[in-house]
Length: 392
Image (cartoon, rainbow, N blue to C red; front, top):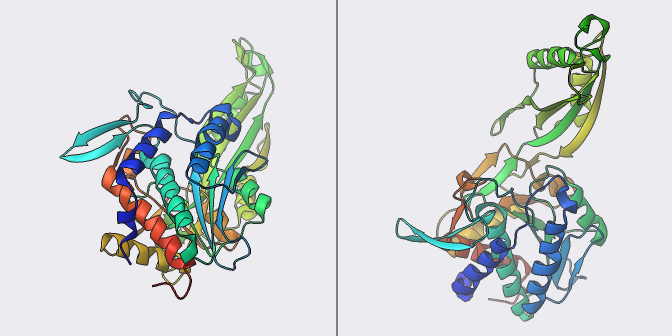
């Protein structure tokens, strides 16, 4: 058969990616519940898919998008998972202009999220449209879901999607920029929340109080000295680092009676989250004269698939078919939803167009050729797995 990539209109794909960039969907403190992000899915993506003939589309109770293409009763299923939320525009100039720029003689798209979430999202939409147009050659179902998340560091959105449709699939691809390489595994993460309590008083008489800031400093010191167990041949060592500290009451000339700290504990495949949180609690126990509470926060599961897994083998074959090059793979310290999907027995990897070095930068760009390749690879992967046995 003809290379599927050549059947995807590159100019239409480019305009689709620009359209997605032009509609902001930035991370805020409201996370998945931000009206801008919900509106991006409801008012931009939903009608876009329906205009392309993808009619079995709905929003779950949370507001995530679920599009089903093909036969729901089929035993063969492929999952594509894209993301709506992007990093905030921050100091980027014209982040939502959807510019086309030329660098080094190559054509690029520029805008917030284009190299991280929205390039992959556009490529997945184009692939879903291709699958829908070729259903007569297929005998299975493509489930294309778009999560409200993307920058949240938790699995709430994909958990909602799974429960909504009792999600099952033979393999899954998480659409995010990976330098067009297969992210074969990644660390997970648990946020460990530590609250240190003291006693307030006026700062002119500090001896009458118990300064929670000083207690928090001692907690940080103890945890810096705590041995971190675990090492992976590709992911390296687990880490524990402080990421946030806030003190209360927010008042002048006052010894603080509470400090809230957040520690980022990176997880390796096979780690026991409860045991890890317990180690932290034990390390800082008996912290007189302070009272200290340790609470497990959001968890993002680590992920790993082997070379013989169905998703690795079939995605590698699709990359070879489209680009005539061998697939390359890597492991990442960053965590997103591949670990969740693997935990629920959907072998999954991260893969998509976009150089990771451009994420969150003031010049976030994506090569048009790389975008086109990924659309072809996604489509090739779904077609190869779902096609009828008699198809040639």
